[in-house]
Amino acid sequence: MSHEALSPQQFPRHAAPRGFKPEEGQCFLNASECAGWKGSRYVEGHAKGPGDKEWTEHAWLKMPDKSIVDPTWKDTGPGFEYRERKIR
Figure 1 (cartoon, rainbow, N blue to C red):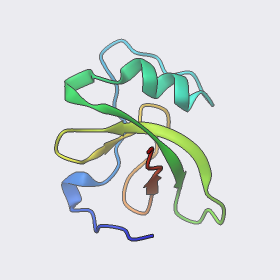
Figure 2 (cartoon, rainbow, N blue to C red):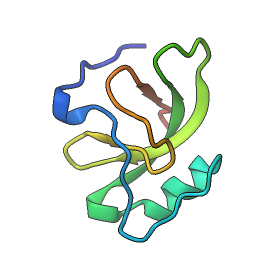
Figure 3 (cartoon, one colour):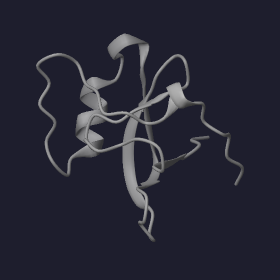
């Protein structure tokens, strides 16, 4: 599986629509409820943080500029990895 290098403005970040309160441990629900915000699209796949040995099934948003916005994980940034599951 190939990975593209992320530019600094594409590092994953935590964000959500104003007033949205993410439910802890409910990434699929959180991402689906935020999909479409600022032109984002819902994405499923696997993610892990710095130091994590195992990948976790996860959902997040991909913005029109290809940056990753995670409405669930609040401590995202450099060192976090996301692998999008391609749906046929």
